[in-house]
Length: 452
Image 1 (tube, rainbow, N blue to C red):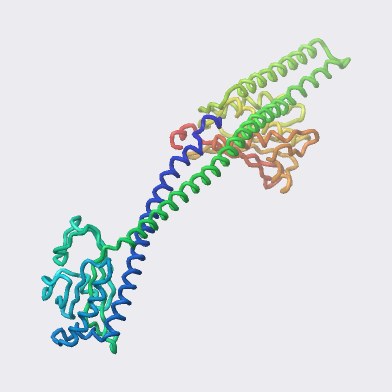
Image 2: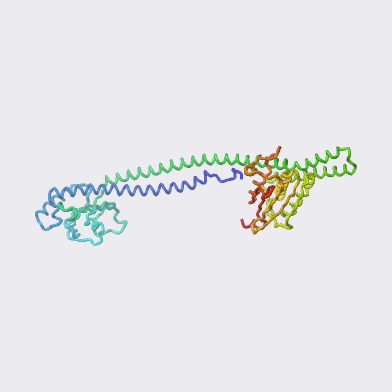
């Protein structure tokens, strides 16, 4: 596949990563800003709690929350509350007893009232510091918000504990504030946080985009080199197949020419040798024509191929060589189902396998071809009666340029294995139980191409 026609990895990554990184930045910014706001508000509430507790314990006025009718405690408590009134931020302060009733408030109209829907107050009466914030008029207002005119507020419920029994809650001091300085500090902190998230997202996007861009360039360069290498490999394999299969007709031509050179040759012998030479040249020309047609095709079109006639045709072409080497042949089986392959290339593979089997029997012997089929594939075997092949040589036999023959190119079986693998088939060579070797070729049946 041409790398220039492929979608850019960088563009695809940029589009998807931008969505992911922006989503992560927004989610992280919202989470961290919410956590930062809560931490700062709670810290401010803790400071207020320490101040109120120290104030009430120092002057001994905390007992007022337990005994609101004691005039002396009331006077001390009111003096302590006057210290709170000097603070600029509180806009309302309430003092609740342990029963939830308002014992004192900066708004006298609230004294003596109870608020049954105040969950924050109930938590504070259990000894927990509760800090909450909100905006009036945006959500459902609580009864205790009556009379407040500000928009944004922070309310703190400070539990007041017994000086001698920290587990005993005497009451709760509630403060409503408009924290101008705190709000400004929170806004600045949140703004810096969002800027940091945005900057980190931009840096992360640019860094990842740069890395992926570099990887994309490398992959395209490697793909281009791979395409060139594959084209060169195909050219080498094609040239090797031509060279490998031309040896047989060239050998026939040489033998015929040598026989014509003998003194005992008769006109009839000359005519026979002449016909052998012409037939061998025609056969070589047909092979070259087929291979050139294959090389000009950008992709080998696969189709149904009848193997039984092709085996017989290949054996007929190699018949002169088999006669010279006293090699007989036998085909076990009549018809075989069609396989999915390219006819010209499959023909070259079968010729290579048969030529190797014939050359493995220099002193003659019997060549047997057979096949068996199941529902998905055809299994073809070629048995020779040669000397066999060792275990180590068998492992390396399908490697390119490895050959056990003097002057062999070592590309016939390597090309056959690669081509068959592209078609979904296999080729294997093993020693037989007695003598010789067996080549096994498997190919998918032509009726199964729709199942893939």
